[in-house]
Length: 241
Image (cartoon, rainbow, N blue to C red):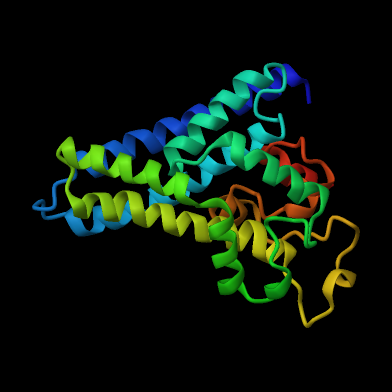
């Protein structure tokens, strides 16, 4: 695809995802009315949408890490990716990108920060290792300051928990399960021999809609490792070839 058109489409989608997340997040955290008769089902819907959009926020940043968000203006793409990560969970683009680069250089090995050698078929233990790899004291302090600011601005504790903390945790589980564990897990103790090539990644068999809903097509993971410069919205096309 022409880099200029790829950048236009990528930035339009990124803007839509970031804007939708921000609008729903601010409404849910600061304005949601628990006394309204329709509050419970709307709260569930908002939490679900924020979880899915949070996954999208990370995927936007992920494309920026590979230079596929805005190929003609890599620095601009990095800025958008940095914003998406910061809004999502206080992550630092500069700290995560080198680890993600290692994941692509040494997938499914002891040098891969996303892979748990001792727990290659155990999702819970692998997730806990995955979480501690990316969420440390810096991120904890950033989130503590952010929550404190929300409270000072009048947000309720319950709104922060349901519409910020819960979507953040659930989206991390969603990203991990569909974007890391299923593509890279070991099955029946066969280890790396079960994969097609040195990328040690497999793709799911989901259709377009389920693939989009689970992980913004990041489950087409072998295609992603084969061509990391392919943006998320082009992965279904790469999968069909």
